[in-house]
Length: 282
Ligand code: PLP
Image (cartoon, rainbow, N blue to C red; front, top):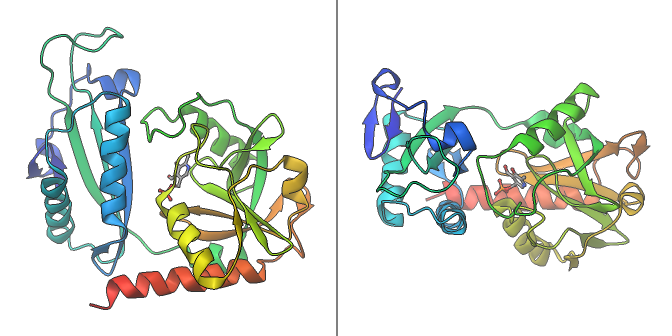
């Protein structure tokens, strides 16, 4: 197993991380996860672009060009011979004597990337999952893919303690997003999802789904909906790089529709699968 440490491919034992790394002490950094299908990265350009956008939003300058980063990730995947799985990467503002404000002297950001081999969660795709309403207590810049994930961690933990796979977070009445996913409801043949404001992450899978909706003729309203409206939806699902299109068949004690994955959700899953096939053929 090799890991990218800054611009070098090394063994894990060779890596030295500082106790004063600002990622470790403040969560002062950003990250991405890219899915690998048949050794190829899915929507790699979009993920790399968002990485630079997140960096920009926290005034962190990534010391590589996008092309160099792409090449580094490609080499990492090849070196680890990953067929199906994902690559995780993050960058922090680096190590400096602990103080909240940015370091004044030139501090090198610290970049780490590693691969994880793994199967796609087919059982979830087939059966769907249960979810739990959890109040969204996170900060007001959820558009940044920040390493500060404590709100998300607590939401997921609350859901899992209740035997649910994902949290349906809401600010007051308004459903925002999952703990690590975007959320969608379908009612009377229209798909509803929270607009891409500061309150949610603009998911790359969400963008793919928006284009798949056009493809399959499902009208979209990027409008927020309430928790009451959520449980009255005909269909409900979540999306993320790893969850792809995962049906949500129950929220708290409320069954969604018939309590099984809906027809539009199935069409979106099939269309998503076709996008993956486009990537892996050629
Ligand atoms: N929202 C949050 C809070 C997330 O952490 C994630 C992904 O991990 C998503 C949405 C989905 O984003 P993407 O489709 O880019 O994986």
